[in-house]
Length: 304
Image 1 (spheres, rainbow, N blue to C red):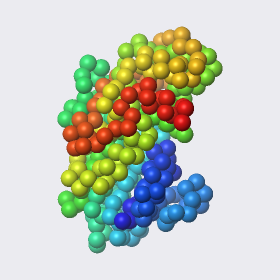
Image 2: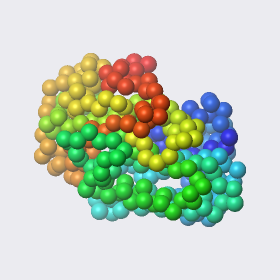
Image 3: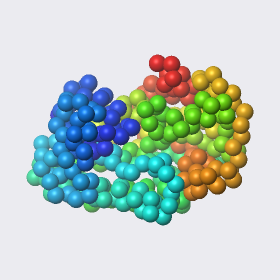
């Protein structure tokens, strides 16, 4: 089966590419930098150039594809959220998704399924509520971005199965939030951020890509799915377990005002927000996590 991946060179996308490649899918990578992508991922795929904004030519790339997986979007953690950067974060997601939907709709033979990236930022910060796929949207910047991102799929042809991947904090050493969170501990100045009582909704990178494959192949799956482990933990637990696995002290408390002063809105929404998100639909539909315990996940990541 031909699978088209947009965003295959990112943290999640590169692991997904390797995983699906081993499963012997026929993979097509859509990227701005063909040579760079080929150098990173190897020659086990077709590589197609695309500007990330316009739908022209995408419909031809999608020809004979069984599925399209769209993981594209500018990183949230690449610098302070100025107004210009916030606009780039939003537009990078909207332009790509609108183009993908338009190209699928124009394709003579349409893919069977579109797996579209999203994030648990949709829920905003709701510290007192356990959040599943039926929970309401939040009211901060990330919530507004994610709502618009998901809404960009609304015009998709109804013949195409649509799966929205609301992903939590993905744990791995090759990217994402974990290396940045671990850095203070490596220098002996680790500790919890803010009150430490914020809920932290996470997923091991291997479970993330396994869940994507599950939703790809599970023909009854459609709509929104939370891609998070079943057991969220509080930030105090995150600090404690990072200190344990890295064999470093856990003593420093970084107060809210320092995070807000250093990082502005990004710190407020990414480090101080509290989200207790559960993967209700994934579990109901039979997906089994390899890493449902935070301690087990960190031990695997740092000792494997």
